[in-house]
Image (cartoon, rainbow, N blue to C red):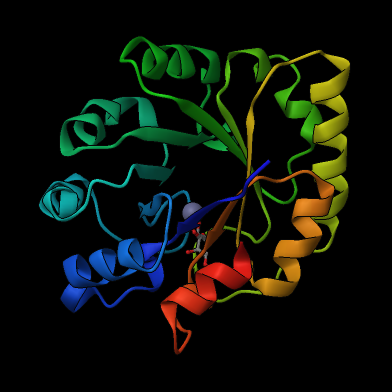
Length: 215
Ligand code: DX5
Ligand code: ZN
């Protein structure tokens, strides 16, 4: 299966966000990964729906919106209106995860559930049938440029086993955090097909080269 490469604009230059998005599109990105942080669920604050709406016009690439916010059910509509093409919410941030997953699906968007490094794969047991994507966090969410947590490889293998045992058809398996050319090879091997990378793309001298080495 081909890899999907999703550069995270968290590592872009916010003073020229539109230009940076166009540049990664030209360099071969498949999705644009958008990290929304609320300063509560994670100790950092980024941007919200207004910024997403502003950059919607600069690219046709799918906007992969990763909500690192508490109570995402309160603002799903805003992100859809702003131009999100797919939405991922955190299992840890939702008391009624099933309801919020169904709500996003009812709006016609593919839905993902993310789990933090300390959340076991078993937390997905009763929801995985409803998902288009699972995001295994490979760092603790909140910041770009952190080191990859090796234990995530075991979780990817457990997830692959769960998907096979349950006979689930295609489901995207995404990883996010500390992904570079070396860790990309490890996560692919362990079952991931959607690779998010921030600093390894925007911090590289050549965007094209960075994306092709991840691929
Ligand atoms: C982390 C974010 C990531 C982040 C990854 O909380 O969800 O998307 O941008 O950054 P790198 O690739 O630099 O680890
Ligand atoms: Zn992310």
